[in-house]
Amino acid sequence: MGRIAALDGLRAVAIAMVIGYHIDKSVVPAGHWGVPLFLVLSGFVITASICAEVDRSGRLDLGSFYRKRLLRLLPALLAVCLVMLAAGTAWSRVAPTLGLYANYARVDGLDLGRLTHTWFIAVIAHFYLLWPLVIGWLPRQHRTRVIGVLALLAIAWRAVAIGALSPGWVYNATDTNAAALFVGAYLAVAGLTIWQAVAKWSVPGLLALMLLPVFGDEGRAVLWGGFVALALSAMAVQYASTGPAWLENRVLLRVAEVSFGLYLWHYVFVRSDIPLWTALVLTAAATVASWCLVERPVLRWDAKLRDRKSAPRRHELPLPR
Image 1 (cartoon, rainbow, N blue to C red):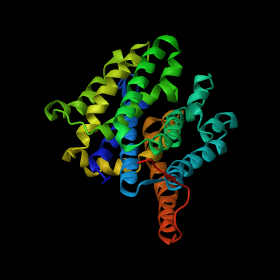
Image 2: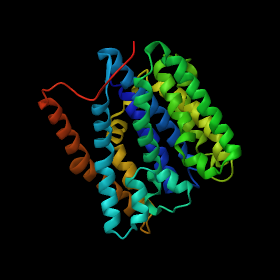
Image 3: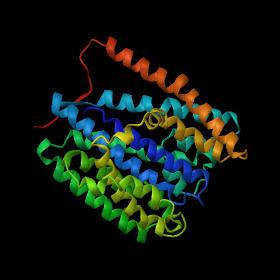
Image 4: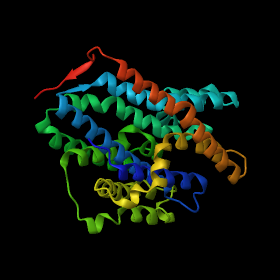
């Protein structure tokens, strides 16, 4: 799968929505809609990437897949956790973050403090762990049908869970957030086209509706409103996949490049007892430091290691034809 710059731009939009929500919920009451947008985008990109590798080589290199995701997530996450431990954060709050079960720790009532936002990373990590195994054993001719059914079941389960389970479970759990991931995965294999005249308004629609208090985090409207966010996010991902120029803006692409560190660090400072301007300056500094000192060196090291590797790859998953 060739890289589509506009999808990176859309990732920057998603992180901006979430940061706005964390800074001031009264101004951006539904900025949490950046989460389903990011999940749909992740489901789309990961599924398209896996399918492209399988169709090209007939195999999915599981070892390579897991190594890339592990190196993308853990070094920066570990750096944040070490800083928080040094700042006096209790191990009981750090352990769920490093153990990648922060979302279910929140469901269980644990207050993670300034690591609360890492619940989302747990959801993504669970998807990275399990989804390649599903795609790996799925014959090509059955992809669209099976993933479509999974998406419908996940959407139905989220609707049932809203009425049957606690809001905390619906908002944080991997199973209820799977709807957005599977919708993105379905878009990757179905090859759907949409009416561009409507789709081009999906991102402005998300940005406008997130300002409405009705979709804020009080009451069940936040949960049912998630379906509105899901529909708009699906259209936004399809629209971005056509490569609109405005989503390929240099500023958006630069933000997208450092978005993981930005997500990790902004909450640490924004939710502390310091002035907002100081929190934003520290967020910018920590994000740049994370990218330059942790994330980019690790990625470069991994790239050099792969270039030097001459032996045949192991741990490949043979796929049925």
